[in-house]
Length: 292
Image 1 (cartoon, one colour):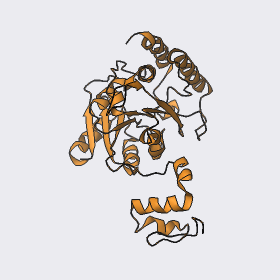
Image 2 (tube, rainbow, N blue to C red):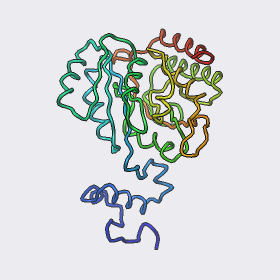
Image 3 (tube, rainbow, N blue to C red):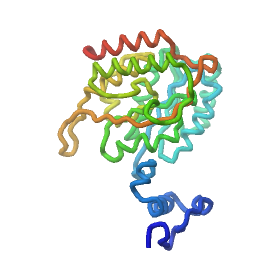
Image 4 (cartoon, one colour):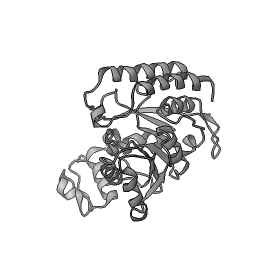
């Protein structure tokens, strides 16, 4: 009798999505999925058992995102992973700061931090990383360009012991909104140049989604205040040595890349990165290749 037809006492033996939702708990759902689909297929889909003690710190730099801040927080909360959600407001001018100040007392599951002056995305991320307490840390933009439902797949290589850092990639197979040709060419050029200096073979160095073991991201010193964060953190994790732990010797940081979907915005919709940030990225690629 094969896995699709074998009955069990606690879970259904046929593909009934309505019965799957309730009253079964998460463990029963996972048992059912493993039985029906098999472990190899579930792993490919990012369906696996999360460690019970896992906490994922989600660091969200926020600048002028009044139109999207409610929705991105809703989406992050909905991901079935235990989370520490850290919002860092970088002195927004559009009313976002007022929204977040109201949440400080009412939304107790959120860690909300404020910069008194605008300092840039990199500075906001540094502030968030300093307050991260989860075993894993992920960067999440507040503008709805990236889908938090992809967290389980992104953290999977780390949880399986294969990686210390995971980069998403918008260029290796997932759906994406069709937008600026020259913008994508600039991203690819910057990634190519970064790879030449770091000896990595990434396809999307500028991607938002980056996941780190907490000891990695808190073990490097970051200096870039704006979008130079991306090439800087790439250069520094490329040469980071993971310290010895429980008899394991020190070793180089292991970096994986996973496909992510992308719903990019245009400039009328609030996209902030421009050509000056591209020039700064060039500078940071060269600078952090040799100097810290």
